[in-house]
Length: 93
Image (cartoon, rainbow, N blue to C red):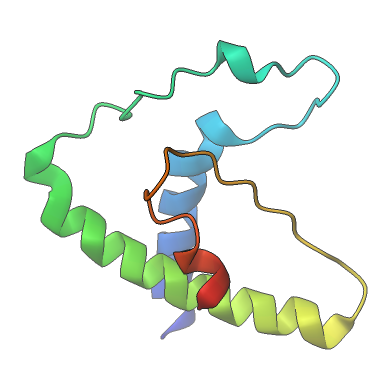
């Protein structure tokens, strides 16, 4: 993937993820997060969402390879969802 395209996808992903990023753990309360929040996405956004997700997975895999190669940093991802919501899939890929 060309660098310019990769950078554009990363910018879009950062904007999408910003509401879910926690920088100050001391003041964070999980109860203040609405689990039904869809970021104003609806069913019509599903095809584009699938494409963006696929691109994001590709970039995330590349970044994970770089982190692993450095052997200095770690990433912790926490998934909260109802049973049978697919939380196991990210750990199996």
